[in-house]
Amino acid sequence: MGTTTTLCGRNKREKHLSPVLLLKHFFLISIFFQNFSLSVEAAYSGKLKYTRHNKQVSSLRLERIEKHLNKINKPAAMTIQSPDGDIIDCVHKRKQPALDHPLLKNHKIQRKAPERPKAVVTKKMKQNNDDELDGIKDNNNGINATANQGGGVIKGAWVLQQMWHRNGTRCPRGTVPIRRSTMDDVLRAKSLFDFGKKQHRTSFNINNKNITADLASRRVDAPDVVSGNGHEHAIAYTGTSQELYGARATINVWTPLIEQVNEFSLSQIWVLSGSFDGTDLNSIEAGWQVSPELYGDSRPRLFTYWTTDSYQATGCYNLLCSGFIQTNSRIAIGASISPVSSYASNQYDVTILIWKDPKIGNWWMGFGDNTLVGYWPAELFTHLADKATMVEWGGEIVNSRANGEHTATQMGSGHFAEDGFGKASYFRNLEIVDSDNSLSSVRDVSTLAENTNCYDIKSSYNNEWGTHFYYGGPGRNAQCP
Image 1 (cartoon, rainbow, N blue to C red):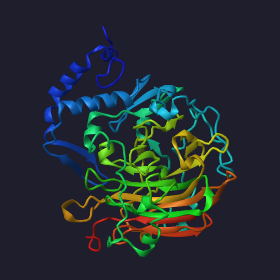
Image 2: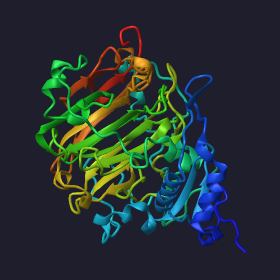
Image 3: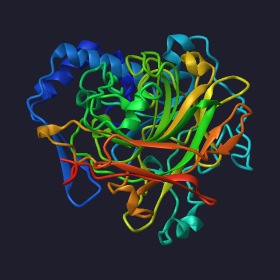
Image 4: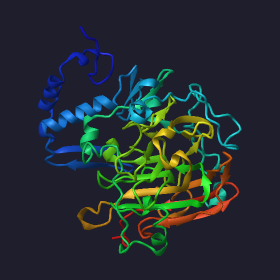
């Protein structure tokens, strides 16, 4: 007799059933997935409905998807049902997906905390944060600076959480929380190959009417930003004049409207190296994103990304492929975060740090003031095995031009930079990590936006927020058809 040990009908005896019988059972329930639709909670009253009609799914494709899900959904020591519908599996650290990567076959998980960049915090960052708030806490230490930003201070509960924490359950020590991927998640993607990946970057089009002279002059420096496929950005950047070993920023969190299921809106840090006009660009990325296609809803979620070949085949979001090694038992990458900022009301932000451990060479991710999330092993990279040559901070959206017009997908808060604090989204306290493993404020940044009628950016500096910028926009409007 088998007993159920996890949610959603997953049980111990399943591993003894024939994969063919399981597939047949599933296929009978979900023949052709006609009128496949997904309702997602929006950031305004009412609900968006993302629908794909007559989506036919062959038994062969179902079999391939099921095989892939069995590979990335590792056996769980414990399973937690999140209020937002996510299923969080607590997986033993040594059984997480990262270690399936062929380059990590003999990798031993780094147990000693990395040497943190100097002057990050006075409190030492911890490898084991089971008794901490895991960095999902009051990151609004710039609250007293809001008067200098032209906005009023509105008191409130400034604690950020991940949704799956709300019922009080946590993953046990020695495990890491991993958001379980489902058949629906994969079916929303263009293909199984594309699941969990950013679109492949295409060549730069100098005749694009939205390309500015400044953007054209940056082609050699940052093709990640000037690439096609409808990706649009509003970013600040620095690099090429010095050796870079990481970056940090505090990022305002919102819930931008997403118009089409295959579009997204994100705010992140990029750490880059490689041939910016070739196919060997290395990129490490982290921030928050809203992606109905990837997650099935419109909630902002903590995410990571990496690639070593300009987004062609290597790397992925979060833990959807092998690579990123998680060490924290209380932060689930890909899980939603709350509360979020509201227009002319409470503002919430998160602090993200990416840096290279000077002793071992792995690239670590810190969240909040004192929390280690995990790391990208040095073995994964070519150019980033040494150092970075550029850092970028800012927003990115996908414009699919459905019906031949610009998307109404929002970036940041959905408001232009000039609207300022409490209305426009911001990045503050931009910092870089130098060759001495020290954090320093970035005093000179360049800014870029492909189409300022749709999304824009304005940078500034003061003693409280250091170098910072407001950015974003509504997308389609009278000046952005």
